[in-house]
Length: 201
Image 1 (cartoon, one colour):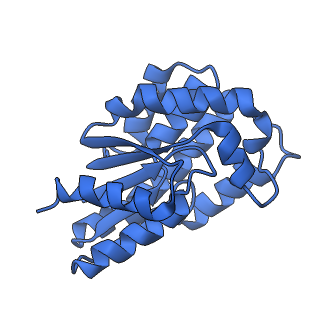
Image 2 (spheres, rainbow, N blue to C red):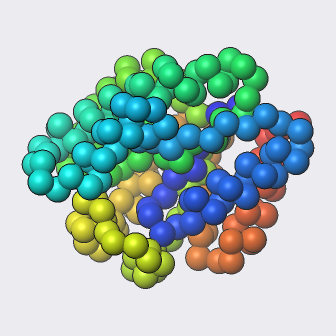
């Protein structure tokens, strides 16, 4: 099974992924964890450019295609082999994030992004997509590190991102769930687990 968790930074994705991985391993499943962009040499290099190399100007289309390239490599090098080996894959972000950040909030055509994304991934879409929903102002207050290139775009941008997740999640295929992340991590985890227990025998 291929599971992705998404949502704006500050929503608790890393915590929920860690809790979910431990839960699934406790059920006897082999779990593989990845992040998009990242988890490959190419993906890590692209991630550094996208998020931290502000000395390198990026046109919207170039930014979008870099995310797609990193994802294409992630699918080929890590996700497909893991799924073929029988692992349950948990990925921190996937194509939905690209559509929302560069499309819904960035002004690019969302349908075109879905099309390019399906080419980049070879049509591999998650079985389960979970979006942790949180007010951008609350999410920003939770971030304790310095802001990356995207996070510096401001609350107005992230309000569009949040609306984009709500609007586009249904296009992911498979099972989808929007989860209120403005609660204790344990409560969010219990809702995620309850949702997955409806799907996983």
